[in-house]
Length: 271
Image 1 (cartoon, rainbow, N blue to C red):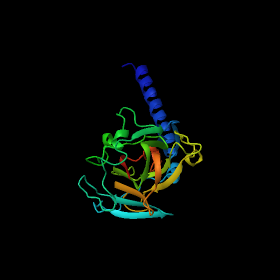
Image 2: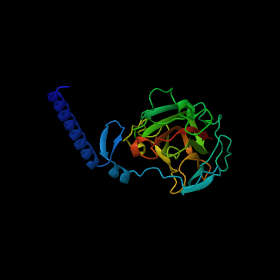
Image 3: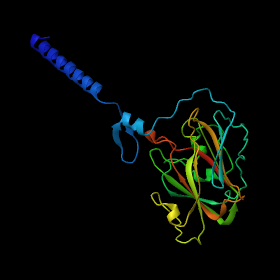
């Protein structure tokens, strides 16, 4: 090879190595960053994001199939939660009745009033009323869930006629942070003053003919987050009220990276 061409190749190689070094140094000096896969996709500082929405807690011990029982009472309404961190398909229920395929919601109409479900899957709403739990945790095609990156979602149940509701029971199952349940449930009838049949996200249902029944939040303060969650809402009077419509305002269990929407397996309404 002529000396002139050899010298040219050496110069090109030196330039490439210098450029690569500058890029590597600049990348090293940049702050840690994380992409947020939501509607307005943007890049934000990971440290700020973690401070605002802490990451899921790591398990402190191997999960057990023993249920952790808890309850919260607000006025006359009691919310019972049964959390089985290491549940299997055969783990029995202790305090909360198992899912039912003959409750008042079995033949009700379920509607997504507001929110997004994952694209590319069949309508997941019927999964909330079939009386079945999935065979395993993290079963995407056997649970209702809202889309990754979305915020609050609202599901309405039409029971076809006003009924006296004794219990509202909800069930979920996931290996990690998408197991806990976080939602508010409201009841209403057509005869309620100012009744709005489709209160979208951002509208307070209590301002348009809906009565709040309960706020549910089963996220554990410590310990293992994943597992099977069963929730039962009841009233000391024996009745939560007489309603034809129920509205579930569902929140993600965590907003970190948009991956926090709960895998709901069933919602039962008991007369």
